[in-house]
Image 1 (tube, protein in one colour):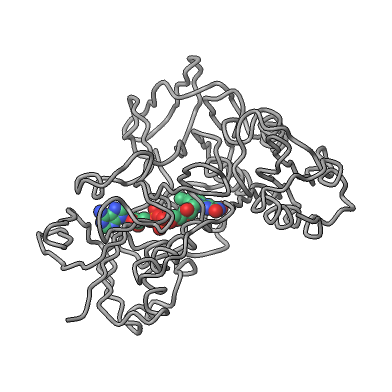
Image 2 (cartoon, helix red, strand yellow):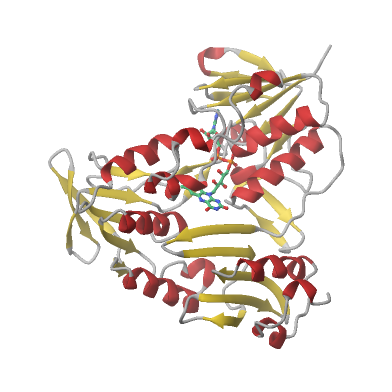
Length: 405
Ligand SMILES: Cc1cc2nc3c(=O)[nH]c(=O)nc-3n(C[C@H](O)[C@H](O)[C@H](O)COP(=O)(O)OP(=O)(O)OC[C@H]3O[C@@H](n4cnc5c(N)ncnc54)[C@H](O)[C@@H]3O)c2cc1C
């Protein structure tokens, strides 16, 4: 009898895993169960091109809609997996149907963290994770609209930048003392704070939301310092929590995400996890990480599908991420930690620079602003944990792709 592989979560990771199973010749049944009504799609444009109106929802699909059926991948959309029944080797979905599952891959991603303050449920308070969220926000970002963005992480910063380009008046609230401080440290945080302010964003640091006031619709945000921000629309971007419940209820080891080994296997036999939900040991970073990066979701899913097919190929990649804000392209590779030494290259004031993060003389991470080639060059050095001369990093004349490791 042929095997059935069930993938829970029909987005980037789930979709790429299903495609990989077929590409690698798996002839059994592949079922892709997704809670959203949409076939797998790309989320990065949701806070960029979709808000700006340069891409439509139809442009985001990761594959031709007909290709799922052509490859005999059973898409069960708008359906939530409720229980992972390990003893019965089955997945129970909405309505109680049980799907036999010889192997399971959990690609359940994350869900947005919500504000727990008075007025959080007023119309006009939005979160951004799905196509539907992005389209709802887009409708509100008309010229002159007063937008309050809560959280100046990558998604919040991108929303602020897109809204600014659309002619909105933007207030950006950040509870920390600087934007992205926890990830990139204070020196870069100061630079990104200045970028927002130079674009006319009203950036308020060390400031959160006390409550939201309105008459059915949001009208005002009261900040933690007691100020009142007149507001037509609020977008909250304060991070996600990994959707670990299926794995947890079934007895898998979970922590910050579903804990997997280097083969994307969970602590349960025949159950794997990949993408934003998976917490994996990364030998390059030197510790466990749970990444919320497009590249990781895609490539880890491919690796997980390989493991389901019996390949013993460990997954080990340099983390890589990008963000587009205003006229800036940010790319980051590796995993910086607070306290890393930073070496600068390029023109910081002109916003054409890279920052290299060193620990014990070893290159651990790089962040480039409008210098994508620096990051591509640095990735190989990070992978090899190279001891790179700071002067080579500093010197724009040195091609990092050619630095010996
Ligand atoms: C607005 C936005 C902008 C981004 N921009 C960038 C960027 O510029 N660069 C970058 O590198 N990354 C970016 N990312 C991150 C990137 O999109 C994610 O890393 C990627 O989408 C993760 O894919 P995933 O499949 O692991 O998880 P998700 O995309 O979260 O998909 C998980 C899916 O599982 C479904 N699900 C959960 N539980 C169940 C269940 N029990 N039953 C059925 N289905 C279930 C969910 O509904 C969801 O559809 C961005 C993300 C967002 C939201």
